[in-house]
Length: 151
Image (cartoon, rainbow, N blue to C red; front, top):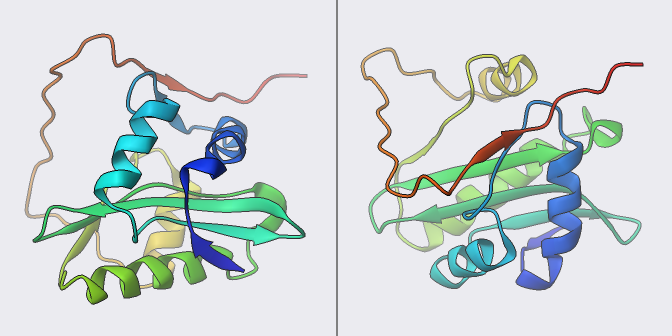
């Protein structure tokens, strides 16, 4: 089942994020308060996938009135290759269209082979005509990457 994400889902979604290898979690943006602010600004466009009362997938999705953007797209490894990721993407794209948004983008780490294969498989196009730039306004908003434990 795909449903709208609410702040009460935070602890379970955060636990899922922590399990995803290579996933980057920001200390401020991905805190409960950071996610609360995001969901308040974008109340209808983020989703979770639930199976047997357990959150097994999530997408943070928002827009600026012109372009939608997907963040933190993930599916628990045990539930992959069952159409859950695609169903969540369709749900957020439908929500964006209802809000009058006609263009959607996302950023995937170049080394995220699983994610990049997924996006290419479901018809998303990798842009070659632009460069992505970042500027850090708050150096305390540290990104920590989940790495697979050896042994």
